[in-house]
Length: 600
Image: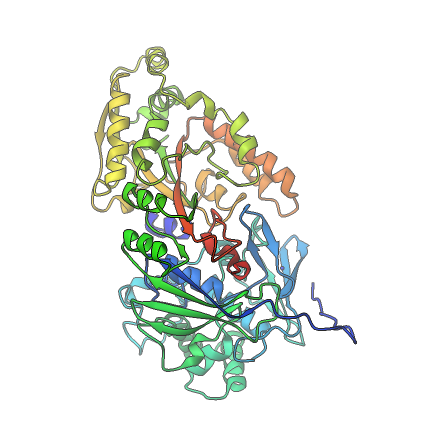
């Protein structure tokens, strides 16, 4: 697996709802005539953000607002179960097996029932289990347009390359469906610690099986089309399955309001009612949605405004009520002049410096003392100030490898993991360690994106500070720096960012484990391996998992693995007189996490 794909990968007993006779239906919270306008930076281009073409912030946000599932994360990075959609239960630890059951009465916006066939399609699409062997997605789907390069290609290729549900890829066996077609049981090939979010959860933007079938087979009969999708997945008809895969991967890409309104069918609190390419998309409360996330605003218009100052101006004159601009000092100054609420927060990406502990260009970092000496020279606080002064003046360092600011466990981890020893440069201490090792003028070549001004500034600060302790620092930057990541003897250290779409153990073993597929710096530590293995157990409770991760985090610092620098920031601004209940989550989709709770 290439480093680019790794990084892209790194951006639940059956139950029946009982209707009690005589119960009075709850009134809808949707306020008739209520409207809201939100300014975003990127345009809307696709209803399927887990494909290579559809991946993008705005596509993800709108898919979230128009979708639903078994779980979501709140603003405190805590997992919330949505039992109005359905329930899931672990039915076996060895092998790990989970049964997912859709609640009675859950419907798509066109009135069609959501059932286990929809779950089955989501498994087929996102697991990759049915894909043809050794297919390079770039060879079958145009990354610029999202269209298939050869419509006569009969191979099965679901393009879920941007999916963050990595755990579902370990479900390679065809799931078992209940007789009533309301439940689906998935058996995982190996223990998956994030099993509660691995399927139809926060990162799943499932497509309706009946719509995919209608588009794939040119059918007007939703029931027949859905049955054909089911048969294609379970019966092994390669031609039909290839048509389903091709449709799922490409048909939800839009350059305007689609002629087939079926493509806009949703399962969440909102549905798309209007779309003008490169201008705006309008979301309207889904009248067929009756779950726990019912919309409050009847209509939300999402305007695409790439100029952050234009977003600020629109907020000032009342043309928008929420803005999520790219920040710099000019935008912040403009927002500061307004009677608006400004909230700073974090995204799910973090900047870090990794050291090649083996197979590096110079070999100097094989010695832990040399690694410690180098890390003692890194001016972390100054890097944050320099990189983010125009974006978020009060930004601070990230002080944990395994926990992000705001995650449960972050505060406790940073207080005991040893990060405080690297709060400020210690040049004298670095020189003492180098003298102890007998290494003179160790060479360190750093890989980074030289075309990125922020990373170039980070490199310059590190090179100057390390140079004062005796290190000879040079740049290993290149146009294909991402593909160079993990290449033996190509560099000694690397500056880049990871994206973690959910808190907890996540892909920790993949990055920090000895045999992890995303272990790009050849790090190996038996203690870390053991702690992460224990934390990854499907039987471990969340509190125990946090304690295990805290120990692993401290070991990473003691081993001089590298250094987390900062969590990438984000800022929202909104008119508090026009909209309430707006808050930021550090996890995707950011401010949209509780869109249904926004109220006038």
